[in-house]
Image 1 (cartoon, rainbow, N blue to C red):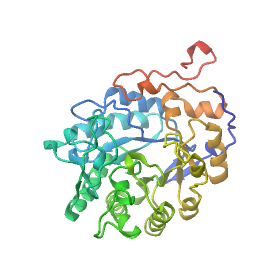
Image 2 (cartoon, rainbow, N blue to C red):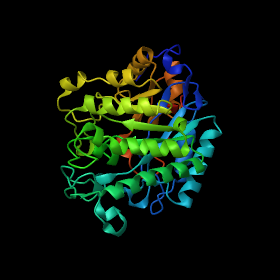
Image 3 (cartoon, one colour):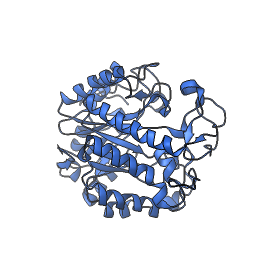
Image 4 (cartoon, rainbow, N blue to C red):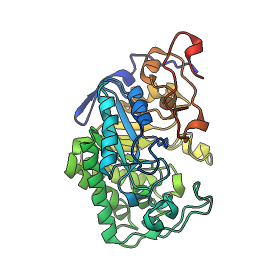
Length: 380
């Protein structure tokens, strides 16, 4: 696989993101790879190596989805940021990234209904905006997803404070900022989408109400740690974990407008493109007609675009040059620790090994080679 990117592309131009002056616009997005220590949900030494390998001077890394509390839901091998041991382990990661001049944010996550009672304290039911199950089987239990318990209003406010505490712990662990996970069918996204939110109180029904939880989390986190080191990830069309909205343009435009009005100094907004090749393959032609442009027009701050760039890295240059966006590369960055230099110099890319994405060892994680002109040294 050979790219045709040029070092003169906007991808390799500096940009200010919140408090930080980045030297390029190639971003590592949050990707769960289940390499945390089982039982403690604390980052392993493998993760220290993984993030350090991918750090660059003035480059932005976003560390994987990390549980804000023990009750936030989890999967085996997923990280947390709610204990002192987890904070200490994450500090090794952030120190390693900083030694190479990198910037690293932590993605804060609540699974909502996407987890399973077998993975929660006391085997309690997962929580969600409404008692609506994800269609189909749970990949961990093999059984149909459980019908979650609808959150009480006071519990929603408690979760807002869990996001705040997690953000404060992230800063204590040395992170340069946090990205609130409001995408991919997890708890915040479950509130946003009409398919998963059937509430009739102040958190359901109208667009204003369905976006209330997301806005309250951003309000509280940015007040606690600073607007310029707070960010949010969104996915209007992901359909992940069974979510779908009746009016995606109107819903996410309203949310973006509110953020622009109340929090214009947020570090960035991170949107997933409708063309993401990991999305369902139904209605492909219809998806190609969808666009993030309306949200780009509303948000005046830094904008990260993610989705579809692994299979079409040339598109990254086109989008960056046309919009000035930062571009997040997922699976490509897993397989190419030196991705920035490979793209800039038009070097061939390593191929990723999907079978090793969610295992628990170094293979397919920290053993991808950096570029060498000796073809035998390049892992394919």
